[in-house]
Image 1 (tube, rainbow, N blue to C red):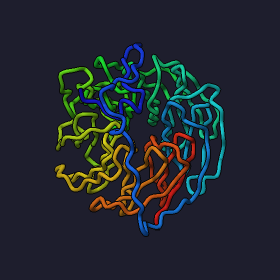
Image 2 (cartoon, rainbow, N blue to C red):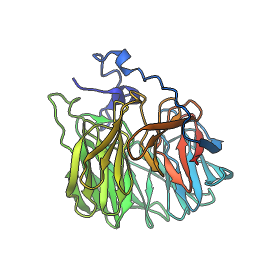
Image 3 (tube, helix red, strand yellow):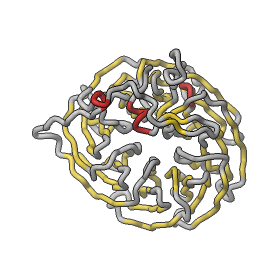
Length: 385
């Protein structure tokens, strides 16, 4: 039976459509094999420095991704706090209370005028750019992924695999579509991405779904990978994290499946390679980066998928989505360290500590800084000279 730290670390695999979670699904794997490797001392290391830090509330059992818009950073926590920070300084511009505990966020419009988060009982809440509540609606089930905010709609995916669009002005339901899910699926944070008047949705069973923003009509639904194995557990092959879009490429990775890039307009595969990750990919002009389930960081050529390098020095450290940052690739781990690898050959060049909490949220770039948010609630802006 093939299972990984992803299942154990996340609580694991969840039965969809209202069934309960199943902890400790992997009694056959020895715990010592899951122990994170000890970090090697690096000398002298790259000159990374903390530009600013800000403490928001803890994420608890959920993952809150910071979002960037209008030179501001939007963050949230499980206790219902939503904050707007100056992206350059970390200074709080406003703080608002959702009035409910949260499970997902933050979604924000490109101009920063509408912010959306998910509540603990499946509520979808919207706020304006000053933190004032706009509207609240009830979704069909729990929301784990950050909503996405399009020019005219807020779109959310719920754990019953229902994708629903709500009018950005008043929360009125515009359209919805629902897809059948396998018997088992990862309880992770499958994301949504907007481009070309479409919303691209990470799906179970290794599939990617593209829907028209205007009416929810499917543009395409294609497999990045096909589930394989003799048991339901072995056949779990969900798309991990949020699909990454750059120019004409739609790139993604699946758990126990493949990494690859598809044509963003047609869904036709440009290339795929074997890989396994539940946290998504990083993409730049030349490479696609993957943090795999064993703690290795891999780079593939974006044009054709040739393997470029692999760094396995961070075994079982439960790595975040990697991000391309200048001449580096940055990635967070379960102890709150941010590691800097050479973008060209994967050599470990340096690291910097945050607050000791796990980094599960996807990092993002804000000007010359790279932003990481820990499960303990520390938002850190880091720069490398």
